Image 1 (cartoon, rainbow over the protein chains, first blue to last red):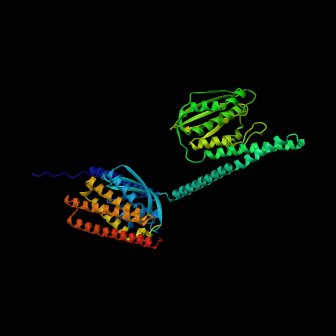
Image 2 (cartoon, each protein chain N blue to C red):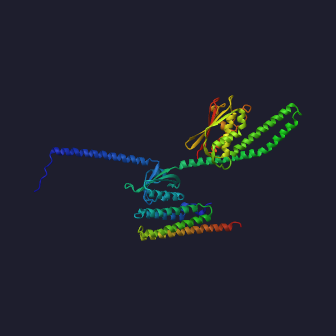
Image 3 (cartoon, rainbow over the protein chains, first blue to last red):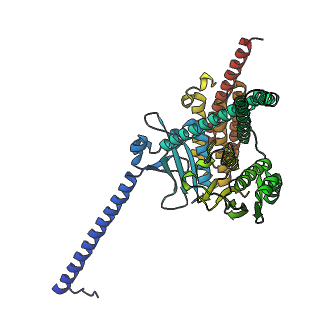
Amino acid sequence: MTAETPAPSSDEISVLNTLLDQTQTELSLARQELLRSDEYFHSLIQNSLDVIFVLEPDGCVRYTSPSAERILGYQPQRLAKRCIFEFIDPYDLPKMLQAFNRSVCHPQAIESETFHFLKQDGTRRFVEAIFNSLLENPAMEGVVLNIHDITDLNQAQNALKSAADELARSNQELEQFAYAASHDLQEPLRKVASYTQLLGDTYKGKLDGEADKFIGYVVDGVVRMQALIKDLLLYSRVGRGEMTKEPISMDAVVSQVLSTLEIRIRETQAVVTKDPLPTVPVNRSQIEQLMQNLIGNAVKYHGEAAPRIHVSAQRRGTHWVFSVRDNGIGIDPQHYDRVFVIFQRLHTRTQYEGTGIGLAICKKIVERHGGKIWVESKPGEGSTFLFTVPAS
Amino acid sequence: MTLALFEDFGQFKTWLAARQWVAEIYRVTGQKPFFQDAAFRNQLRDLCSQMLAKVVEGAQQADPKDTAQFFLKAKDLLMEIRTKLYSATDLKYVTEMTFNQMFASATEVGHLFDDTIQYVRRSTENKDQDSPR
């Protein structure tokens, strides 16, 4: 016995038609959405500044993004099924292979390498390549290679490095010259100094008063030139040769400096205090010179009150910041940078003696140790000289 | 100074042959079941990149004697890879036919390495003879 299916009523057909229309509309909307999304991602890849490849496990190209034509000059279809190794500069191929091998070995891990990619026109582009192995991803089963052209950046970096090298070489030559000149000038100047001194002693009072005055000027000039040359030699020595570093107690350094400056401290009735100071890896003689110059300046540039100087240190990240604070005459902020420039002086010799090299030497010593030096001050309110030294 | 032989290194016959042979090794090791044996596959591929690195380093040497040394090392690595192909055949990762083809290509690349070494050595001898004693 067979049961006959009753024919649908007109109402039921109408409902079914409505449902069908709705489904078709939804389908059409979904298709449009899919197309939009597809277009969106296509446009994203097309306009990317990178070239994206999907490679087979043997290095053959399965997919190339359309940007390859714009960036490397290859139409994507011409690269299909070709081995990517053919397009790498021969000299760079071994390291590219190693990066590819590492990527295949470590799925999901990101491997990066730089090498030259051969363009269609035979020129080379320096690229940064990011390998991402998605071999275990069923939707991909390949190695995604993202190539970013860094030729211009690399050229700029190379130009910068050449300029820096050239500057370093030129500085070294200049230092060599300053060293040789100041070293060789010492001997004849010593002779001039001795004989003018002798001239002054022998003929004092035997010539007229004018002659005594002129000889005095000559002696004074020679003594000053000797001081300048001695400091210049010291300055050029800071930058010369290897610099050995060892852990040095800064407490011991300050004690040594205070002992060296004992007479000047006593004469000016200066009071020098300090916090406990750390041990840092530095060159002993240079750091002593640095502290001697800073504390010596603090003693020298005092106002009417007796100098009060305090030395302290504070750890900031990877560096120690040392400070030498005084209650001296202070420095106008507009001269902060000038004080570290060689032969720059803010006062006349009659006000304060000096050659104008002391703080330039300090700057050179600190920079050779990989640190920075600066001053914080206001006229009449004292100065604080701060410098950093790497903690390790 | 680079030898004239290496001036257009990208078109240097020995280099091209070595690179193609390496690409073939990658093709073979990229197929199942070879690809699934990660340790063996990586070993072979690493040897390949090392071999090409020796060729590249050899071409960049200023002294032809050093160039010859690097090509000798490249040849040693080539022979090591060739020997490992026997194991790949035993493990049935490659067919007898593929093995024979790969083996023949390796021998050919080896001969090209020998030719390069001979050429470089001859250039050294000529230079030594030319130089004043």
